[in-house]
Amino acid sequence: MSAPPTSRNTPSTTIPPAEPPAARPAEGTTTNPPPDPASTARPRLDWRIRFGALSLIWGFSFLLIKVGTEGYAPFQVTLGRLLSGTAVLAVAMAVRRERLPRGARTWGHLAVAALLLNALPFSLFAYAELSIPSTLAGICNAASPLWGMALSLVALSEDRPTRRRVAGLGLGFLGVLTVLGAWQGFSGLDFSGTAMALLASLSYPIGWIYVRRTLAGSGSSTLSLTGGQLFLGTMQIALVTPVFSSAPDGLPLLPTLAVVALGALGTGFAMLVQYGLVAEVGPTTAQMVTYFIPVIATAAGVVVLGEQLSWNTPVGALVVLAGAALTQSRGRSAGSKTEAQP
Image (tube, rainbow, N blue to C red):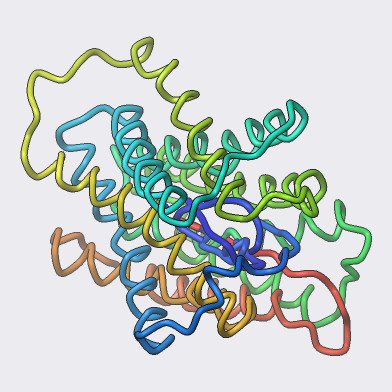
């Protein structure tokens, strides 16, 4: 469910400061540029309230995707999501008098970031939820920090494995196998939908590692980079949507509202909230939102959509979260962080 400005991987998604992958959500990895002056002003709402709101927004993203696909094709859901999110950031940039980044090289890197952090994972989750419950999609998203930690050991020279982090990686993937029911041969599991959700969660840390290597220290503000990234992601999806889906017969109310809320809140507004959290309490605390997302996604799917849970789903989800928490633990090591978004 995409991702945001901390130093780990969120359900939404974007360029550093920091997303979950900055933290995230699932909705990568990055280094954090100096916070924008506008984001350092003391907010009126306590950070705990904003933290809770962010957890709810990203946690409900998977429910909104499911509702959106009831009236629109997956690519159309993604296009509407990106359009709404881009509009929110465009307004924020206008208010703060921010300009889009300059330079062909920067825009080239942003195009790749948009594909890996927005267009691809958003579309994969939308397609996945055609055949799997929103609860399972939210739990698959929680595997993002695990993928990110495994990739960072290979791609980021400053990351060094520790016993604690390796144990967390093993524990986390054991939790994934528990969720999927590996001991019973994955019976009753929709393989294609689950595989797409797991690939979406893998796309986030790949994107954040790419961003860290190419865009950190670019000189542009986080808001400017994120605005450019979402704009390019919107253009990418706008090109492929007419090829793979026909125009909808109408504008069904609930799916339309779900898609607009998914983009405006989960992809646009949530990023702005996270910028403020990172600036106020730091990326380590802000990225903790990652661990609330699957819990809220599961509760929303069961209570609102009436989705069924077997015992292994919540148990496996808790094991995944415990493993992800261990992989993010630095201990005595100064390794870098990886984050995940919706």
